Image (tube, rainbow, N blue to C red; front, side):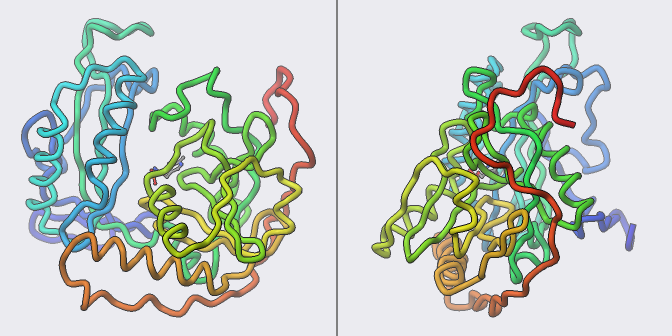
Length: 343
Ligand code: PMP
């Protein structure tokens, strides 16, 4: 706890995220005090990862691409056989109400849908209610200083799984198990995040963001055939194409990383964060990365229809070579993982 006052407590987490424990969390139709927004310990989701969610950002009081996030949430719930207890319109209204009541203009929006507690404590959970909550809090740069200097990425030991293994396009809690393990390992090595290869050995994505590369003025990004085709990713691809820049969506081999000159990550939390290092390879934060980061910042604020002329110019991005993550890059295509876990 870094400070507290009448009715509010502000936490500063290890990652530097300020969580204002004040105001309401929307739960099942009403705004509940932040401290009272509780779930039962026998919630099915806690035991079996029966949970889907969205992460979004509001700029100038307007949620960016809210409809797209709502639609993905409904698809994710369907993939996990969880009937949504509210309509798309009700969800949108609830998000707007929670944002308005929060009093925040720029904020992170987390919607979570999960199987609650009930008769079923086994794997099947059709008898347990599906519940929805919306929490909104201020969240600065997800990668901290990396937004300016370029993030350092470790190479994850786990692989993004095959679409035959799990519903890979659902934004579902279970898919984040390997993300948390990999990000912990990366942070312990002084990196900001980890980059996954997929089950075939192709470059995939980071633990909570998609990845782009620049080579000789063209952009390359992995085909999202076994991970989220990010809403931010699609926005950025549209921006690049509008500028007449070639975007190659394709399978990328890890050996190619050495040949890329620039790279960045995209996602609602990451926004557009430059990458300065992947494994032992160094990348530069150069003009195209700076321009797209700047234009993305402008876009999310233009779309909010307000205060665009007051939008602050992004600080100059500087490249400083970060220290090594000391992790060898995988060579060649990885075969199917044989039996034992790679740890
Ligand atoms: N991949 C993963 C694993 C993520 O968690 C996210 C953030 N939701 C993304 C990609 C980016 O997706 P989007 O821009 O659609 O939110």
